[in-house]
Image 1 (cartoon, one colour):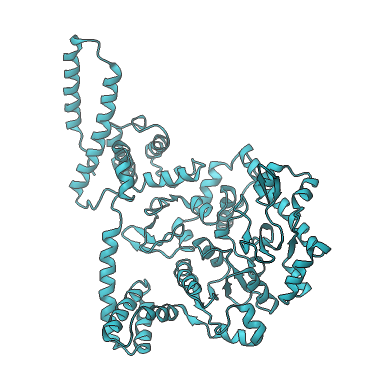
Image 2 (cartoon, rainbow, N blue to C red):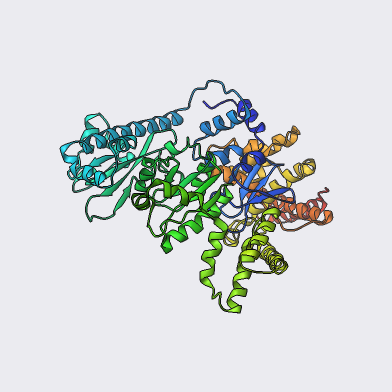
Length: 591
């Protein structure tokens, strides 16, 4: 059984969606809504909308949407009970004890069992490293100059050539089906069940609560792939997991060091830089950025100095910025990575490099220079234009002015000239953004495929939410049963009930549904866009047309259901059609 609706509504009402989402996403007011870059997919033009009056969010790019609970579930990668707990704590609401439904019990039991299996596997790999079979792994870690204390701290282990984890876990009573879901064993029709990891040094991957949720393994020798991670499971999402964060989260430095691999993190921690973390073979994602923002607001990026490393840093900077995290880039040349740097120059010199980390915008412009011939006037002019575009994208006017002054001095440009270039770039950028933003709120291809009547129904629901004063007029002609069966009719029933009681609360309707996809569907129903219709008379005609189309469809279905008994009914049918035309002509919705 879920928490009572009164408890859920209290938590929701005490967590204003704009306040909550503003803590994760930088938003800018546009009319009655707020827009920002979507945290759920990468984009350059803001399509993520928050509507305070509806207490809902919706992305016109990826079509994710819902209320404040939906946002926390998606952003924090958690189930509804945990999202409710997070928001209750934020608002200071004490939640009563509750009993769980059967499905939720099964889900929680599965997660608990998978955590148990990973914990047992970590113990197994740890012991294997220190056994005779673990000699290759121990030689590798010793060769990397890791101390016994460091190996213990990170729970490092070894998966031997012959495997053995599957047999060990079977001896603990775990069934093959469950072991398959853990990602630690695989099934082959010829060989049956076997270990996923073998002949590899093992790195337990922990969440911020110090629970083992997955593993990474580096092969011994020249096998492929060199590094192998656990597949994603019910407890592991690599796009939202950072290696070493369980220890780095308690840093007192006020920043994290973001690097590329397990050994970079471990070497840095051993050298005293316990604020180091790393992604797990992926680029920095919005999920990583949101996770970081919960603990610090500053990150130092350390990537290899090759093109791949430079591109990784360039991609990470805007994603971190969108989450409210400021980044700088650390230069380790002539060395490839932190481990190599510290072994050659030591922690003190590494600390100096951290203190001299490069401003991320300076870094981006320095990299941008490579695309232009700065010795040629035309190339330099085009570079300044590109730089002006980057400055124009900054939303904070103080930040823009600061960078105009700094970059004018840095590149010997007259400040007034750069100011004018930025203004021109801002105008061009705004013009392009207006052109590119979908007027209907969805991609053109999806709109073309969508059933016309369904679209009309969506638009009427949006109109009712935005203009609740028209409800008494609309209800005379359109009832909830006139909407298509499924989600849209359930939403219509709930919305009509709220409007009859004069208790409009679209966000509460979202909570009626358990499925994440349904949350986005409901949000879409309340975020349909019918273009730039500003004149009151034009809006009245538009909404009237929506009502007429739905009412006409209902009448036609009723007539079709009545059937045609023969020629004697032709006159009756013709009279019915005329009555329908007369009725529809009388409809006029006034705002």
